[in-house]
Image (cartoon, rainbow, N blue to C red; front, top):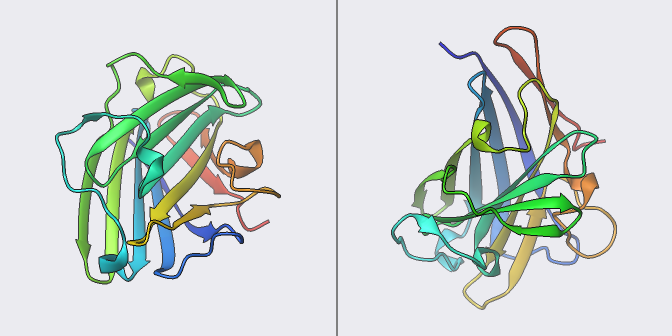
Amino acid sequence: MSARAQASAVLQPHPDTPGTVVESIESTISWTSSRVLTVTYKLSGLVDRLRILPERSPGRSDDLWRHTCFELFVGAQNDAEYYEFNFSPSGESAVYEFRDYRDGGPFSSDAIEPTIAVQHDPRAFQLNAVVRLDRLPGIQSHIRLSLGLSAVIEDLNGALSYWALRHPPGKPDFHHPESFVLQIEPTIGDGAAIDYSGDR
């Protein structure tokens, strides 16, 4: 049996794009010794006033962030290389790899395909995504990881609001290193520890 570590955190709206229909976005992240990462985003608010793409066949698609989309950034601590995952409520996803800040492009390998599941009612929308980090060449076992969680939320009028665990100064920028405030510390044996520093 794989050991599991878990942590919860709350995403904050960017001060320039507070939005009007979302009350909160909570996240939960769990990590197993087999290097499977599960992230859950739970949005509370007026769900029927959000623009959510209809369900489609799972697969890769670009420009998902132009509409309601949930995102995960993963990098090794003290390393400029990182990965970006986009999870659409449609079931589609995108994976990008970067050598340095915004220096990269689509991750071409089909070895990693996130699994996405959604559920919702008039007051809540939840998206779960499962990612196999052991299939990423730049993520080695027993290396401390830095993660960022974020979301782009679109309302029915086409207005976008930007949410993240932490926003650096300036315009919304999920790629900024200061946004990577969740750390996963693999420990000896099957254990792991998750540290959240978003409130500092």
